[in-house]
Image 1 (cartoon, rainbow, N blue to C red):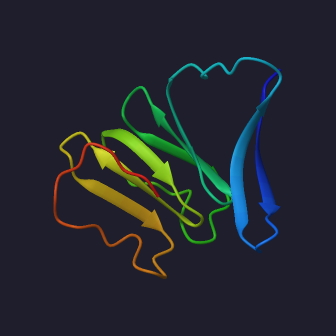
Image 2: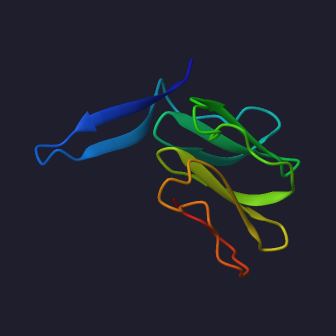
Length: 113
C-alpha cells in the first residue's frame, strides 16, 4: 500500500516546512490521473488525464475547489493553488490575502506557488 502524507515541521529559525512524503514503495498514479500532483499547506491537487484538476483536503479558503477547465499543469501553495490552462492562461483559486491569486495578463507554460 502507498500512503502519501503531508508533513509539517518547524525549523530552528521558526520557518514552517511543508512536504509530501510517500511510504510503502514506488508511487503509482491512480487510473484517470496524470503524474502531476501538487501538495499545499493542508490540501493536494492533481491533474486528471482529461485536463481537469481535482483537489482534496482543507478548503477553508476555497483552495480545494478548482475551476473547470482544460489544464496542463498545477501547483499548490499554503492556502491557494494555480494551474496553467491549455491556452497558456493561468487560473488561481483559494486565499488571496497577499494577492497571490491575482495573475498577470500573460501566457505561461508552467506555474509554481
